[in-house]
Image (cartoon, rainbow, N blue to C red; front, top):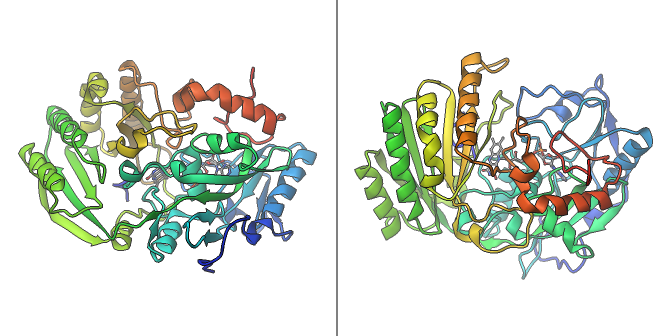
Length: 460
Ligand SMILES: Cc1cc2nc3c(=O)[nH]c(=O)nc-3n(C[C@H](O)[C@H](O)[C@H](O)COP(=O)(O)OP(=O)(O)OC[C@H]3O[C@@H](n4cnc5c(N)ncnc54)[C@H](O)[C@@H]3O)c2cc1C
């Protein structure tokens, strides 16, 4: 969650999969680099990614996906899978291979009675929220509007509502997937697929062609308040960060908070699906003021209006963002804090952010997402104007990553990948990595679907 950067079918019963996901193709359109529309289909949100696939298969149906994967198999080409294109490190593209491009599969269906929601992989968060909110329903997800629901869910998916309701992947009930041989699977017949797609499914062994989720009654409003402390030196940044950890640790589940350290400023976002007049929101506000943060007041707005404020920039833009690790609390981050704060203070453009997790996320769930014990997630962000990352910013980025590694921070969020991590399998998936490898061997024995940090075949 980057906070500081720049046909309705309700009433249909869904005992079987919706007709739209079983359509027979095919209007499959392949694009080559010289074709009109190629660059628009290739373009990732991160403008520094220059990977150039030989062929982009613009899919509109599940049958298109089957045809594209079988074509790649016959041609001996690797396959990458692209939905929203917001992956940090370009793992939805490749050089010289085939990309299955899914933005044309943004269908959606809400089942009356059970309010189960089925979405195509091309659906973006912005459209997911606005479509469901009009029906009084919510699928808890991230906040930036352009992010793909597919990629977000397959890696976990947290946001303003995750502490109250759980991760996006915790709401996943069923998937359909085309494997590396072009065969179709349904998680109703293979529960292992559902386990894997709850946090361990990003471009690893198949192309997910439909997602079915449970939804929640939408809270009517969201209350938000922003706090800032300016003109801080490195020690001041550290002091404000420590106080935020104490205050954030006491928040009830309807509340989310993030702290953002940026040059000489610490900023806190506090949100709640309950009233800003509620005792917890008021107590947190008072504690933040006592800690030296200033604020102009709270805003309580209808949920749809509030979410628009956090939709983020349309992009593409140059950035280098990575997971800064999971922590149970202040004590785990503490050994790295002096180094982080000194570096952020001396490196304009470098942002260190910590988000609250915990709450419903911490409860048991059959999923490949392994980080439930951690109440906090850090993100290191670097933004610049154009071209490659300026040397000073790159050096600051490296210093903070080293400080985190030296402090023993080893668990990282799959959806905030870092291409420099050597032990990424353990860092993203923990003890579940071997189980994901076994699924890989069954669904994609030729390693057709792959990227730099895709789950490897056992023994590879
Ligand atoms: C501006 C911004 C804001 C963000 N905010 C949040 C946030 O609030 N919360 C959060 O949890 N994360 C957030 N993220 C991270 C985001 O969850 C990941 O980048 C996510 O992987 C993006 O999914 P996508 O479909 O847009 O990207 P893509 O680049 O299309 O895909 C990302 C990965 O998922 C795989 N994938 C995509 N679709 C499929 C499919 N149908 N089947 C199999 N594999 C697939 C791709 O192969 C690739 O490995 C944010 C990212 C950005 C850039």
